[in-house]
Image (cartoon, rainbow, N blue to C red; front, side, top):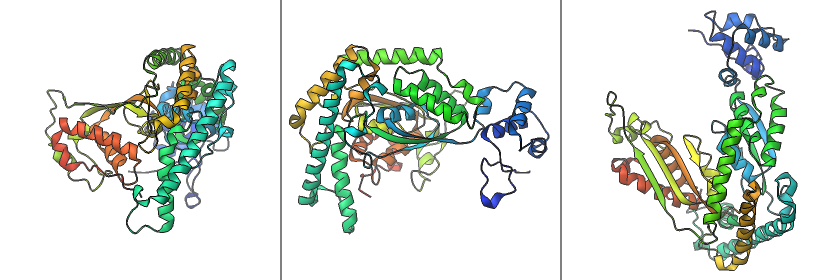
Length: 448
């Protein structure tokens, strides 16, 4: 057995490793799959001083599918500054194989200066004044509620859960997070944020193709900028990153479905919590599952432990009727399986510390603008939503991934509303898989 490391940028301690570009790495490994020479012999034929000629020579040797070699390019990192929270959410929905991070709402600017220009997001010109006014009032509501809750938390320390023995600086941070996390439902989904993603050229090509096929000007502009940047690293593979008919057709149908459902259900009243869970343990008759669920779970020291076949083969679909966009943005990042939402406003969530009646005029005007945009068939309706807008959200995956998510989102430091949502769906899961109850740790979302 021989092992050879291939590095896009070798660390200083590994000067002997050949430095290769992403496309050269992909082409060498593609050639490797069509040869029994070994990687060393293939590298000996590569001219590292002229990688393009080597790539072309290898790819002409045989017809390699662009997708099969695109996945061999290693992690290509792209940072997207100043994109809307909507586009950040959409990127995580599309790029299901990416690793990534988004700026927390606790650290980005919360005022109208941090919004995209109306023409960048396709707002109808006659509705721009109403949109600007609504955004300014939404930020003002966020700021006023944050200040009120911060003062309230300081005046009534028992209101905020703080770990025993916490230092004063920690107490202050937790108190401020208490206020921020409850005021955030007034934040506009149009607010600018930053996202960094790492994925292969294959997945980038798919992501950019998808963005380029959407009806939103911001998505298409992002596609062009990402493509321009990635062409520097992976020019041949990014030829497959332009809008494509099947993506465009599905985007059109999904927008139409969202508009129809959104107009039907548009509301500012809070939706009561409902969850739906479907567990499927069916296996082929010639490969029955024999492992008890307890054996699949009991050997783990924590949620990162490896689970057995009893849960890895078990399919789970779970859904909520009322996921606020604030929570949707994070729960949407669990990469396994498939996530689906029409991204509508079927209700509006505010935590118990904030009275709907105090902000009803703002919510009514926000709903009226959303209704008008939807009635016009405008994809820009998403930029009138606030993070408190409640939408149906469905996630289908396997039980081992679901259990990890449930333990994570109810565990130490989990956001209070995540914990409520995941606790409810976890209990519905236990009704169908009662033998898992003793081995799945439902947390209490204690502050860190």
